[in-house]
Length: 521
Image (cartoon, rainbow, N blue to C red; front, side, top):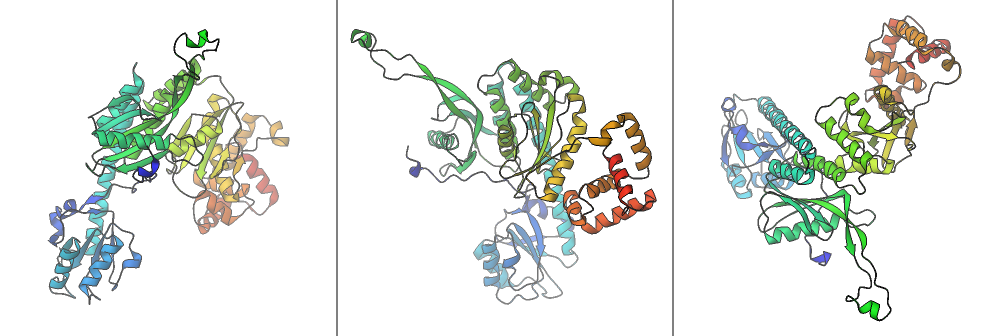
């Protein structure tokens, strides 16, 4: 089918950081005394904003519950029209001391433009309403995190079953309350789970699958659309796996080629990429995360030429997802080492989801990827020799030196430090420098004992700040960038280090000894 006849699917974008709060949930808080007096009953609140400007349009992001006492309200119709144009979710109007009651013209304007209008009683401060919304958001996020966690555990358990692909699809369909399909690039259904979609929905999913499985540079890894007829949310994700289908070239009727002395071409396998397609009635903020987990598992389960080593690594990943300790799965990962830990973060500041993190791992030559590490926007990749990290477009990388499996926790810490150094110095790749020269001549146990004694007065945050500051040659600004704190905080911490150690940090001999000690950690 011609692509021009398709709806215009959009590349999947991350949802809001927390699920929205339904307006009904806020109105149900009786202690607030809020009353809806105009506009529709349904609205989703993303945050709260207070403004007494005559036109707050330039300062709204959309989805706000705007609170106002109407200090500069002169033209209610234009005021409400501008709020709707800015995407405000609802308007809360506080009565007294400016207005004794909600102006009738404002009520009529909100009904006319379809904006929910809440009457805020005089005894309810705006800050109390904001606090209630934030509390409802926290509760909603907690529920969503629990739902995603349950889905993750169910998907990991399904991946360990004898029939893993159908089991994963079944759990995915159940947790998203929809239909999950494993499709080829041509739209052929290999496995399905959940309620059957309409023929129109199935055709739309096949078109989305074809879009994300096309082998072209810069093509989307995921796409979404909406079934206009049924309001069903549609999405498709490219998988790392593929199948091999037989094709024939220069085929002839049986015996005809031999009779004419022509060669009959034998079937030859042709690789065909796969896609995960979803059709759901609703789209929750955590659904993209759940789908991302399924994409990783299905990519592993459908990876081509899955030999014993690949199967063992997939089993190790599944066991880790189920809560096994690293020591238990280490034998399944392969040789004892050496292994290289790489930390990465997007250079444009965007969060890396499971798909982009998986693509980074593939570029570095590894399927052992941990997305959302630390504060949620960093990625960890575990490489096995002979793979060595190389700079990647769009990423900032920090790598530890190759190490055996037992030393991976220490390497993980050093890779994080290398990433911080790379970001502070604006280099695409920073690699930890192993101990050489005079430092390598001192027995490690004696060096560690000396370091513990010398650094004993420092708390871990102070020691890390001092180590980072010394590694960046005493630069306040670069250290602040690397630690994600204010430069004044760095100055205060370094000053505190000097007091606790009772030494002059401007002395090069002192700096050298401290650097040597900090390198032993």
